[in-house]
Image (cartoon, rainbow, N blue to C red; front, side):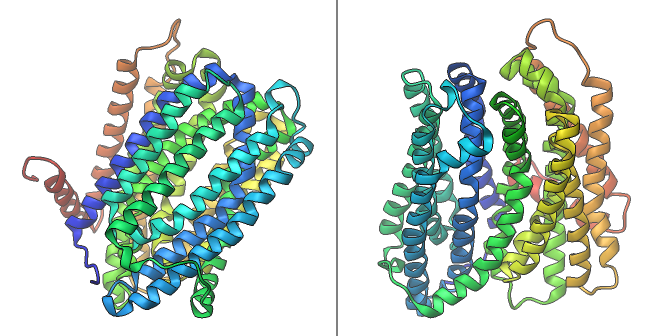
Length: 517
């Protein structure tokens, strides 16, 4: 039952991941203006701070889910069923025991620490205790869900993963529409998210019992499985810590230094950038179980797949994220109003640039994790987090809240440098530098330069009233298309132009009802 996936299968998996994320993004972005209007920016900022406080717990749940998926992906043959069951049972025990303790801790001490660290008070923070309790419960459902999800991830069953994700998003959105008008508080917003996570967990349990029930097991501890999960998960925990610092540093410092509404402004800009960034990441997420099956492949084969995958995702990331840069002001104005647009558009531009820079490490991170080299991932993430946090601590007190985002750029530059150096050390091939430049750095650099040039020409229009959605969508689509064309054209100037063109033709042939040129 070892799963061998060809290029067509990988493209299909990416499509399922992309569909699920597109639905989630559209619903989340559509509901956000409604949430801000009903809650107010202060309460929305408090909800953002609670989410940031719960984020450290994701280090545990994400590391556990990834470690379990990797171990199960290598044990899909019927002869390995007993060993796979031991890994699943051990992971489930860790999620129940350790996850339950973490959720309890969040519910008990989260509110007092947040009041102390962020100076929270007033009506927007009256339900802080309930908000932390609901956020902690939602995280616990995420933690348990991560273990059951690993069963589908190991089998690269992204059709079911996508269906589960869409169902959870629909429940979250519908509950917000129904409950927030009745109880417009930050705890209601977080409780609706928890309902979505609970839906994901229950669906994963139900489907796993129906389709792969023979591979499930009751909670139990197996020493060998525990050592393997901890060995890989320990480094992954460190990697998650670096990612946490990089992703939440500005929000923590804004909460400590300024009023919650500024956290709200930042959260709006960050949510837009994250929606696009994570969307691209989700499309590439299918590479993790795929790389896990390449343990016995030759190094040349691994390098070829790694760098070709990097080029495809980097062109996509540069186009999708770069398209936000010219349209930042118009999009925020249409979506959330003139006040948020005036305050947050520059932050959105800076965060989009940092997202493009950060895309340099994504595929390599999946490869390192699949090969059990979580120590290298931890090094990349920790260095990124250190540079981000240090820059935030210096910039925000001196330049105010709109300096938020520049620290993320500095962190991503550190991440890019570290990634390139690790690539050189990992693959000792004579032409590795030229390949890294062509497949990794050129599409990202061309994307940033083209996006900034388009912003200089198209992005400074002023509006007496909110621009139409047709204007916003058209400007974004034109910008993204021009960046895509520029990145593809740049790929045809280097020594690996034939490889890039062949892969692009294969993608067109797979998804469009016409023959590739």
